Length: 475
Image 1 (cartoon, one colour):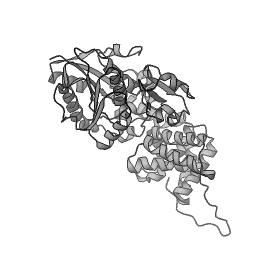
Image 2: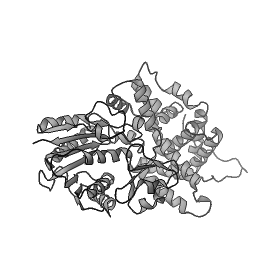
Image 3: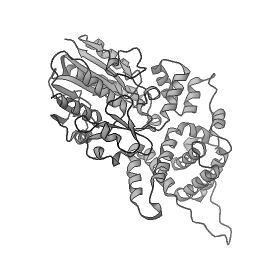
Image 4: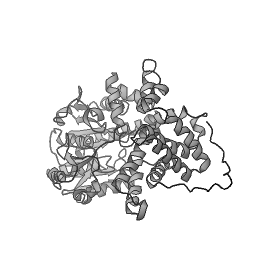
């Protein structure tokens, strides 16, 4: 199917101005920012919604408008691979030859047709009106023709047509059905250790909207204080976690505005708690967060250290991220310092710390629920770029900790090349180290595997897929 040329209006036929739909216009604007500027939706969308709430008149957003815009943006991004396969079946050219803004309008329309309860006629009509506003009448006719084809079947029917049979190509089948790149499906499957049920549950969990989780920073806020908020329920595993059910707004919570609490995934909280509670040989006075940006783990570690009279040094290489760390730690009740430094060439002396955390930069495959566009942005070759940095940071951490002290190696990726492979290399390079069993330090958390390291999973634990290995320096 080709984009149709502009048709002349019939004589005497009045020209109807396109109807602007503020919700769909905002969703389109967010998708364009993600595509054009490599922006992340979780950073782009909140300020757009805030401005829409502050407007006056018919363009002012209420809670339902904000919820619909959020669903349209995140749903379209999560299912992009699946929707592209369906769109490709409805056009007569490769998708790379369709202009990206047109694909964004089509993606929004397909999500409304196949991923929401919006009636088909309304989904098509609203998408065509959006196309008239942002693309013009000619491309709007193209959008109309494609979406009418899509509307002839439901999602299951389309998947049966565009996804290869599981028995012929399991990875490609799962990639299309669950909207993940094939290489990501393969990597996650390897990390899980096989079995169809587990990988399908994980991929499905990646496509669910995650709950917002708060952390009550010890000594500054309590979970009881947070639980009085509307839509708040206790966390599953962390004693400092409170979950906000759908509709909960972190910015409306006093403790969050006052920096006594923060937004932090429960998996991230568990990593910080496990390091803080790991058994030491000797004193417990100096802690280091060697990759502290943007500051969530540093703020929790700082509060835990303060309760013991320990000092926290939070180091971050990027100055703007170091500023976020300083903001997160502002008001911490105990001694701390934030420095801008390269963790692979640190300014501190070897053996200076009792506890060290390095939550290393990674592909982020463990947080695809929160950053759905990352799955389409990442490439297998990215692993090669992260590998030297991850190994260098862990090497420096092991040199920074004293004999008898503990290093926590963490990453928000379950990819074996970013987790166990890095730790195995470090243990070979440093024979004066040993792995600790991290599982007892996550009390009550089930399905932690054979250890001694820990891999959390969205479908098993309701957290990001955080990995943690605890390493003690023995000599």
